[in-house]
Image (cartoon, rainbow, N blue to C red; front, side, top):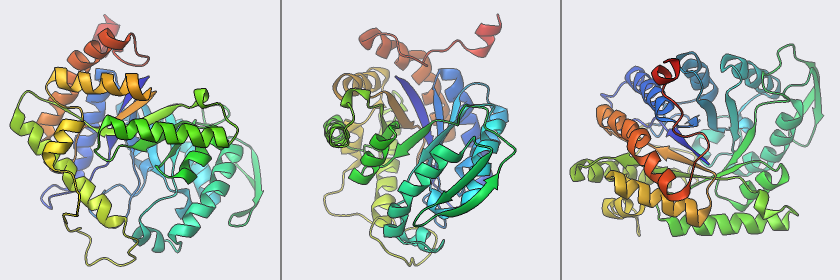
Length: 361
């Protein structure tokens, strides 16, 4: 298994400019690469401060020449928002810009507000996702593509740029719904779920449900490549840890607000509304790898052994988390946490890669 850094890039403070956020994200990804993370993930959202990233492929293109070996993933591209011919071409081109390091995470989306502004409903986005995945899996990397479905109608179209990876970049499916589980099983594709800030038991249940879906689709559950998404900060400072957990609660509140199916919002800056039964920062602190080295390592070892996660993507920054605190956390994760995890569970693929200077020497 390996670790990833998940870059939501949500903007909690107006004073935190997009240009500053982009620059800090690049530095954090570079630090994660040096620390031995396997993948940097970039998401897609529109029109609110929940995330400033409208195109994960643009972020891949921006970060690619500023990194060397870390995989660059989309988590996730929402293909229902794109013209088929354009997206197929951009995927192949992005893999060239990334020198063969692109991972294509796909999802159907869950925010009705953003989907409607592209002329599609939540229901339509879910329905069209299956056609999109089929088109991308069969079409990317081909010289000629033709597809006629219920939602997508693409006449014969020629492409002169192939991706570096053959036959195409790997596809991952992101989501927590049974529909997403079925899409992953039909590939089969690696599947990544969010823990929504909750405990390892939640992920154990998600894994069990996914395996049940795979068996129902005629797949061997043992072939499931299962990834998770969690909050993480390495710090000995209890106030820093609690502040990070509070920022995580902020993100959960915004996500919950956007899952109500509303197609109109009062403004781009979303309200930080509490909801019944929400987690406290103390809950998030207790249930996630947040705290000193031992606490973080123990939490992740518990997940690896009980959930069997093949990939753990980590929110290393969220809300108004301080950039220097985050950078220190990423470095300590590679230098201190990963060796402790390996001591407990054995060697991990993709982690503790030699630092560039050490490799050169």
